[in-house]
Image 1 (spheres, helix red, strand yellow):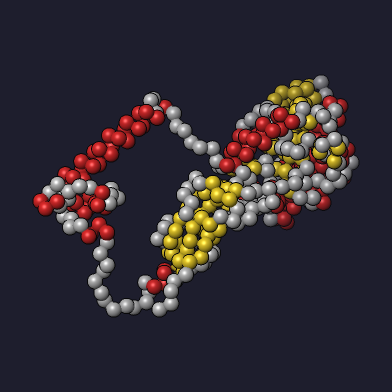
Image 2 (image 1 turned 60 degrees about the vertical axis):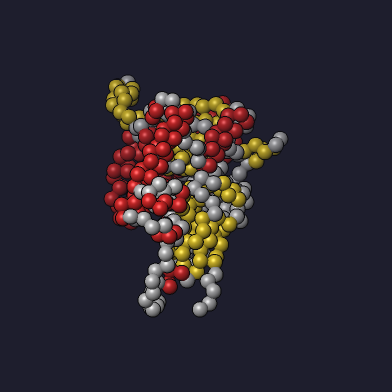
Length: 393
């Protein structure tokens, strides 16, 4: 019989700016059978969560990095022993099972059951029975001692019992905190507000909803209208699509629009590439695909990098008005909010209209107030008169 070989589980490259990750959780436990390319462990970086697959078919023989450990790219975090999982299917002559460690010590059925249930190595316990045998009382004494020690530790750490809980921040949450603070410390952030009457966009969606979905296989949402409206405004006010690098302003002649997505792990901003070259349908498809990947933790580094402007929709959570924070190194971010019916004056009459507050946060170092206000007014005009978007006027 040939000797069994092991394959290393290695932390893969995750983008030029990422050098380490955190072991979020092991999907397989030591001793479990695994198949080639079967997901083994989840790694969490400051941008994405990704799965590392098995390098071979066999058994997960080693876990070298526990949950919560920080690991560098290229590090070996475990091993898979090849072929072990297949050995059980090969007929072998009947033989007496090899004795387990705990069975090397004679144990009564009740003691064996107790140590198994509590995952205790019986060799740790001094037997006080006849001829040094381990009794049920010996095991219970150890368990009681452990509970007392645990209670003492808990009281010293948590004087108020369950009133507080300390949880280590995930790498993604730490990076979000760093980037938001970096934006506040670096940019001169101001926010300008306006409101938009969503009547025409909502009527257009209702009228085209069925035919649009039937033709394109995707629902016509609000986001494509907002992306298109922002594209009109970005072309007119190019500073909002630019960034500062040192003592230079970098103007960009392309439009990669970031769409902020909330996930259980935190906020991520996947990017719709070359949005100005895409139809309403393609933008809706891209947003739907990226949103699903974000919620599943399947986004790639490529899908998260290089946006030129960001749109965030706090309205999905019920926010009526907020001031979004810039996504560095970008100079502008548009905040959408909840659509709410309000009384407004239309041609001298009071009418109830579906209104939404808009917020544009911008870097005042590169964007003047006049430009910011003009940008937001242009977005408002495009949404209140969606034919402007369709006719590109």
